[in-house]
Amino acid sequence: MSIPIFPARTNNSDIELGTLLQPKFGSDGLIPCITTDHITNEVLMFAFMNAESLAHTLKTKKATYWSRSRSKLWIKGEESGNAQLVKELRTDCDQDVILLKVENVGGASCHNGYPSCFYRKLSASAQAEDPASLTLEFAADRVFDPKDVYKKKH
Image (cartoon, rainbow, N blue to C red; front, side):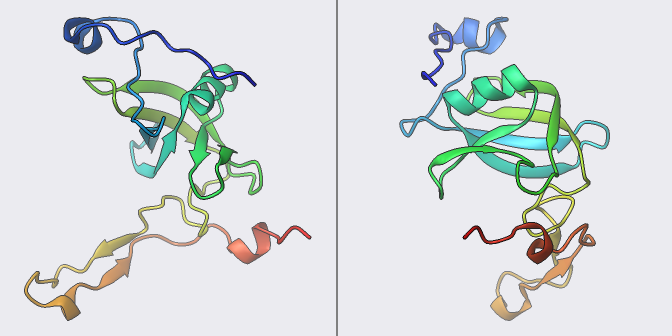
């Protein structure tokens, strides 16, 4: 697949107040992407996109990211079945972050089997001056066991 070309970034006024998508990819070719549930607005995950994954997302309406660890496109749910169907795409004021609002098919966004990647919270008793008190508490239940979903490919 050829690398998609998005409109060139023009001036601040067009970027910040205009109506044309002019995404700002970093020097590494990536743009941060926050993904939320389209109904509850719960933050499901954070990942990166490159031009190819953003174009694939726009074309298929399936959330597609760039896996930095695997150096390849990652279509959410292609292995687990827990897909993200894009209902809305937004960008921030200077177009250097993407926000996807998705239908979270299967109920889990996290590879650890949780509805959201943000399934732990800092304990209310945590104190910055006491590192031992910086404990995390689970704030969600698992939807699936990753050992049952992600089989090693031989």
